[in-house]
Structures are given as C-alpha cells and as structure tokens.
Length: 280
Image (tube, rainbow, N blue to C red; front, side, top):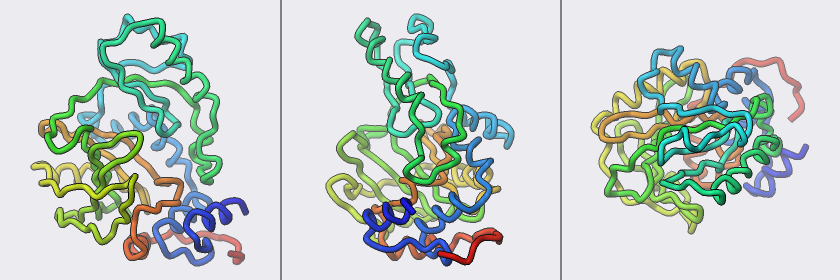
C-alpha cells in the first residue's frame, strides 16, 4: 500500500493500522477506516462556515467577501483594497492582496483556476478532501496586532475526544520557515515535545491571550463530534476568529513532534469500534 511506503520513507518506521498507537497512526486509521463524511464538510473552508454557524459560533467567522467557481467571476473593483484569497480545498495557496490592482495581478490569480482542478489529499489518503467541491473564497484581511510575530499568530488547538488538550502556536511564518511552540491547556510550554530544525524553528515563549479560556471553549464546541481534530484560531485585539478545522495534519506524517508526544497524544484518542479486517 502506497500509504505504508510514504510513512516508512518519511518517518523511518512501519505504519500499524491494526493496532495504531501514535498520533500519526490514529489520524491515518481514522482517515482510512472511519466515517469521514462530516470531515468533508468541516475541512471545506467554505462549507465549514455553515457548521460554525450551526453550533452557535457565527460571531467568530472571518467576514466573507466572495465565493467564486472560477477566477473569471472575480471582479476586483468590487473588493476592498486589501483581502485574502484562497481555495476551499487546498493547502498553502493563501495569498494576501494589498493595495494592488493591475493586469499582472489578474494574470497571477489565474493560478487558482489550476488549483481548482487539483485533487488535494490523494497522496495522504485524505478521501474527505477529494469529496469537496472546489471553489475560490475571498475573506477580509485581518490586521496583525502582535509585536512578537511578523505574521498573524496561529493558535492551533489539538482536541482529542472532543476536548482541547494542547495549543500548537506558530509565529513569524514565511515560505521558508516558521517559529513553533507547544503549550498545554494551562499554557505551560513543552519544547521537549517538539522537534526543531531550520524550517520549524523554536519560538520564543509568549504570554497566553487574555481570552484563552474562551478560545478553548470554542474549540471544544467545534470538536465535539470528533475523536481527533485540530481547531485553528486567530486572536486579534482580544477578538477571536475561526481559522479552520484540520483532521489530517500534514497528512498524518508529522515530523515536528517528538516520539514522546506522538505516544502521549495517541494515547488520548479513543478510537471508535469499527468492523475492520484483521490484516495490518
């Protein structure tokens, strides 16, 4: 199976789906052998907005400026000077537009028509991504208010069995690198649970947001139906904004967490009882 080969090459160990133990293994088990129909809705960056509304959290949605099925539908004159554009099904295609209106920009945006045709998630076994109907979305640009990070601080709250347990914080994000740190829900830092390198650099410790408990409460509401999910937020001048829900972080092939954390997080995930094959 190609997934086992990718797992072996990237992580230098064999994948066990018969007796999954680690965070990566349980993510892949759930992705390949459980009902992921609701994952499809929640991993869709457009459709998830309805899910967020349905659980009573419309107040944390980033304002939507437009939804398009092709680049040709976008009228730049109807949009503000600054905005964020991305697809609803991809990864790494977010672009911030700042005070730019030109033929060159229109040409550059044509790349999104190509991205709409891509089937994201095939290599990672992310079948839930393949069921998403691709579109382009434009959202309001959030202003960075932090003096600790050159980019928006990304609070990624890991939830297991519907409960928030850890906050993975990303600062100073660029295409080449990002600064990371893992905190528990009481905001105790755990650098020992991270693997740092030139891409995933060790972040300086920062204070928790004043409304950390509120953000954790929101994560718990969003994560309620799921054995495992990562709920991402931004926190701007005390206002919380929803980012996305991710079920297969880095395709279940994460290398930035230590083996101890992989084992600890995996032990926290209670898998559903499934009628599966006895073969590994």
